[in-house]
Length: 239
Image 1 (cartoon, helix red, strand yellow):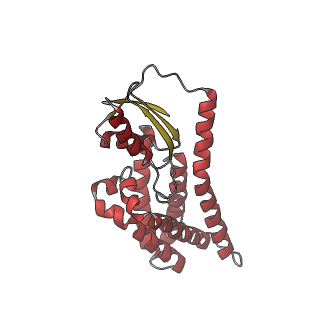
Image 2 (cartoon, rainbow, N blue to C red):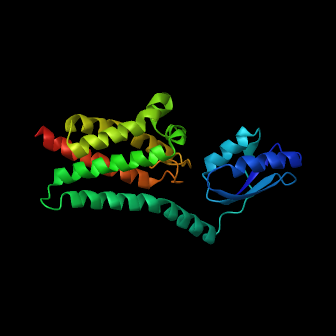
Image 3 (cartoon, rainbow, N blue to C red):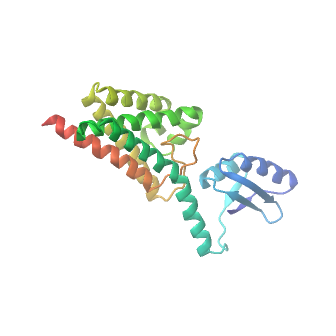
């Protein structure tokens, strides 16, 4: 990744920006040149994080209208990088699916399977959020509408997930848990849709920030599965 930076005048500027960009998650190496006013970045960082780091150092990222369009190999590498980043999420979902399936191996019941799946989903995903708990609220508030307005909500969200997970696994307050699930995941999904429509590149906090997971359509699929199960179980309870 190569970016143009406005405001650099000397070697001291280079050192300041070098340190700021190197601190961004996903950056492998950085080469800043104040003469050309550019920074060459290696790795797979989130673009918005780079911009925030540059702005936080007192400089600005400028557009580069003369930049050459990405080559086929560059596009291919980006696709491979995205696939690699999403692999942990896929593995986690497969394990949750198998866990719920094993829990219902003796006498399979669809509603029971869904409750176990949702319970394991919330427990596992809350665990990942607690691994890097302090970094979760800022990342989550970038796309969740309620977390953006109510900071406390972002801080208690992992606890809320853990509580819902236990309710589903222990079959406690199922109706209330389903309503809460629909409410919180519905809000998050709306926020994700808005960010994707704006083509903003930000980090997804669904499995915390310890893994650099980009906000993609996979996040919509993940939320969609949970919302589908919630509405399905709600319809069966209301019959």
